[in-house]
Length: 232
Image 1 (cartoon, rainbow, N blue to C red):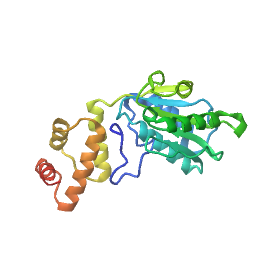
Image 2: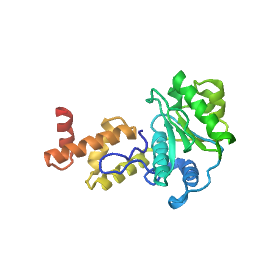
Image 3: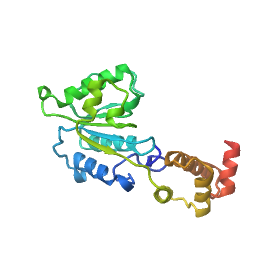
Image 4: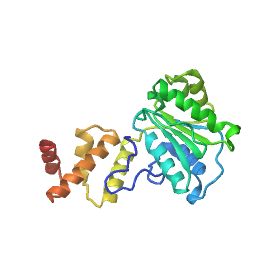
């Protein structure tokens, strides 16, 4: 995740509070309402939610944050992403179904996702469960079986947008502060000017730089960054 993957280093993991929303405030507030404000469970709408946007806008961060928020409430959830080669059967104890990276699903994953979706919203299994899904493409353009694609576009659909440079700088500064390290403007300018400008890559670079600085007991400077790149 390149937009808001603040779940590295000293960070505690993806949370809704650690998502720097930028232009995505409407989607963030929708998810906050769905999981409950202040950790208090609320009845979740049976209407599904779908998040889409190019790689790096923070979709996986948000789904993982929702998963953790629900688990903290004592709820169990179904989780499926493209790395799950053998999806389990639908579990009636789940209170929500989370489907990440749907644009990458193979035939078996699509079948499992459709089965989970139908069971989640079916009154035959009790109260409808919330379905939250995410992919790189809008529902109509997903390379999926028709019945799954149409269901993913049935409810609330939010397009997520990448952060602009000012926001990327703010998130980098926030992450550095959370780690207790000093990231000078010169180092940040070097990172933004010489490396991939997507925030996920920048966060990975900051993670490596922080670890290298700790091992070498040196402050984070441009010479240190160059040394790290030459040796690792």
